[in-house]
Length: 205
Image (tube, rainbow, N blue to C red; front, side, top):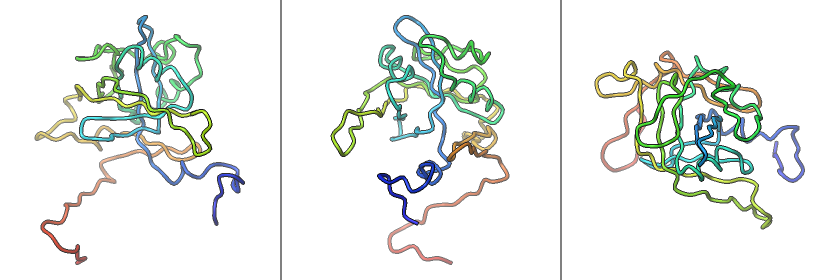
């Protein structure tokens, strides 16, 4: 079938089910008055060796707090924290802390004001670089905004570092699919491939 964005030929947008699974940017921020926000974003990823970005539908607190405070933290959403991560997406009034709502503890970051989730196995500290309005083809006012940050420090629980490498699978990150679907990374579903060396076409064995 062909899905048409204008005619909506399916009851739900299939894009999120196809561009999946997606890493979850569990974003903690602090506004200029010291109020905290914590929210999960599945339109999130690394966009360079030392930069990450998340996309906000509307000017939500994570975006405005990052702009006001000048930084944000991307906390790892793991299987053990899945319920707290989901609870942190509740539509609370501006300035009401999701940390308090979920019962999660804060831990101070090393180089940014915004705290990290103390229970998270890893956290990426970022300085806010810019917010890019994503203007649609019809030229109407943007409803979505891309928030870009530069990574200045990374926290990793020592239990998940061995021989100089981070054991991603051992942290059991969860990822977002379409609809209500999530996926879980475990050591059992890990495999390794090496890039081909030298020039020429890649030849299958």
